[in-house]
Length: 439
Ligand code: UDX
Image 1 (cartoon, helix red, strand yellow):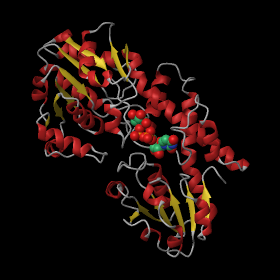
Image 2 (cartoon, protein in one colour):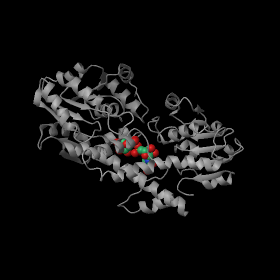
Image 3 (tube, helix red, strand yellow):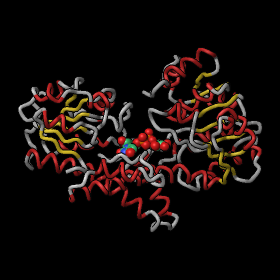
């Protein structure tokens, strides 16, 4: 098939490359000319496992190219995916849909014949009819434009895997037996043939699916972190508790790692966006559980600050603190709503000198937080530190020998906020250790 992907950020660039991998001819469109140039040179605009290789493979094979022109995109094919970002509105929880509506307004007047527009961007429930109205009013093809809702559930650092072998495909249509269903089934035929369930539903359910999935994942993390708070008061061990709970298949161990809580470009934003929309719809009581999940998440960050002050005294001025981790999770350079950087920045505000290290995210962190100090080498970063904080669980950090590290500081104290350091070894090497959920 010939198809386009409008918006080539994380989601769109991955989707475009994966559609080419499925055998389609793909034109990616993004209004950022620099991004288009990078993509056309066969490189990914972001750090994502294997994405560079896949883009290089298909820009070379001729199956994948990129443009900044809506006219070219509109003329290219009859199936258009929209994957533009829907960030949080500054200072609010609601989604900023301006990029989505800008893309729709640009594309609509250029669609001359029947086409399917499949929206992948995450939105508040109730957005699809507004998108349809614009196409029907402004596209020369009018109501021969069929809007479909096809939410995306990919995880960063597993984006290709999650796109090519998803747990499920969700296809939302305005009416039953929409002709767009056949088009999307054809597009995803290799994925469906390999056994992935394709769930066909209405627009509202498809729109809710992504927000609800992320709200659940966030709540699951906050549940175990709430248990961590109880463990901290009772002397129990939250890591072992999570294992015990996880053996019950109804609960499951995955996505229930206790620690510093969730961050990133999706979970916090989708939780907030979901609560805001539920409130608007008069379902504010239902959103209560999600408000609590957000509150637990914020308390984990505060807990690290409190522990740092227990170890160093309430006045942090003049104290040297080293932070291992800047990315919101390992294997990415993404620092959006990074719990590690939020803690680092707060400690800096409280007067500490904060040195941050991270295997991949230092360049991004430097730009956003020029007030912090940065060191590439995680061992050198600990030189003369009064306290070490382990805030993003990169495997590089867990492999560092605590004995060797202890010689770099006169104050060997570590707070393990992710629970992945071998604290027995660290204690044997002379460190005072504190672990979230195990104190
Ligand atoms: C998430 C969803 O998993 C994905 O389905 C959706 O499409 C986008 O949002 P992502 O943001 O890439 O994906 O990361 P994820 O691996 O879910 O982790 C999110 C945050 O939660 C990270 O900060 C991570 O450190 C934290 N986390 C995750 C935990 O604290 N404990 C866990 O058990 C899992």
